[in-house]
Length: 64
Image (tube, rainbow, N blue to C red):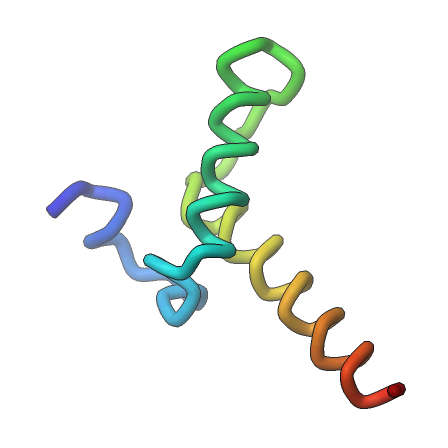
């Protein structure tokens, strides 16, 4: 188990999901090509974005 997966964070429910994989890859790509500098743990950044996207999907579904 990697350190990132063993570290506790409030977004564990999103880990392993398709959304998590897409967001994680996008952030990794941006960091690698120098477009983004991440100064906090990767799981926290990925998790926060996953949470916000999920909330937006729920709001959209409720408004239809």
